[in-house]
Amino acid sequence: MEIKNAVFEISNTDIRKCPPGNRFEFAFIGRSNVGKSSLINMLTNRKKLAMTSQTPGKTLLINHFLINDEWYLVDLPGYGYAKRGKEGREKLRKIIEDYILEREQMTNLFVLVDSRLEPQKIDLEFIEWLGENGIPFSIIFTKIDKLSRGKVAENVEKFKNILLEKWEELPPILLSSAEKGTGRDDILRHIEEIIQSLQQ
Image 1 (tube, rainbow, N blue to C red):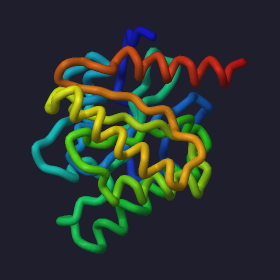
Image 2 (cartoon, rainbow, N blue to C red):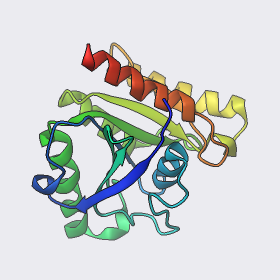
Image 3 (cartoon, one colour):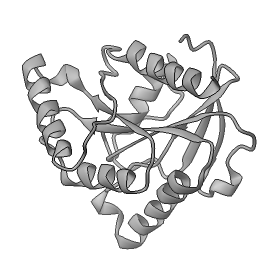
């Protein structure tokens, strides 16, 4: 798949204000500071499409970007930013859950996981919640350029093994580096394959 144009359409906190129509939506989510905005910019070849920030937990809105006038890339708020306070975390949880559970156009959710870290409880619990609710999702391990290939493989394998304790089958797993452009073709091909399978 080639991304010819990517245009910001709308930001909001209420799924009732998301774009109307039945275009496919591919949403991206992850723990705060996982590199989500950088990945979105890398995928679309636009340096400032999604605003990156040094401050974790900066994305508080559901952001829709129209890709090739055909489908939406959706940037969701990050989960689990502890410094936000209980009320703020609850508000964010509602925004995220409302979109994931109620947005019929949501075609696939990409869960971003930091490849540099040991499996994190918050990621595992979020993925388990997706499974319990029957949400279609894929996992993208980010920042793979920050570690040796062997260490990335080891961390990914640990994550898979924990998932396999409860899951009979693993979701699609992809590797990426926003800085190096690694994984771009694989992720876009995956999106294209999902669209094609649903159009048949």
